Length: 212
Image (tube, helix red, strand yellow):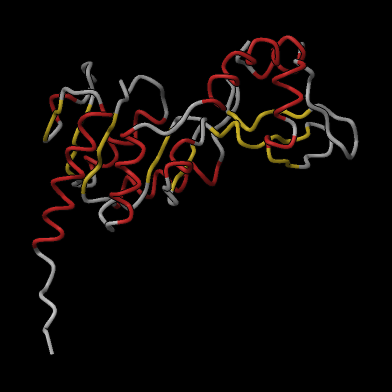
């Protein structure tokens, strides 16, 4: 059901299929890993988050520089007139009544702005992700098995451009042999610890303020 052809052929079945996932996503809260990444951004250490997640939890945690290469459930687009709406405008009715969201302007079906099988990645987001990979000094892969292409090719592009690669994952990946550092931990444990160390280092190395 997670394909564009299935959505076009049987949209009601698609919305029935995705309903349990939508309930979980919109009830979820950012975990310590999301919060740690937001803190790293606020410190000026983390320049960009490239995510395959569609739940918007990075933004809810406070991250501002986020590229969603697989789209997001936070927005809906009318398949007829292409109007875009916040999902929150239709969420209560859909979650409570299982009713298929429709466009207030033309009555067309509203498709979640997530990338389904048979769809291309959003052009602007993909170009931004590729540019960031090719120009970063360090890339951190957090909680990804690097099995879904083409996003799984981004760390290879970073390595080929001379970047360092840090893998934080509980399973092996195809780039383990090329990584500069592998941290075999849950990201919700590892990232807060890394952030704490970097916060302390940032504080210690700050220039002293003269007392007048």
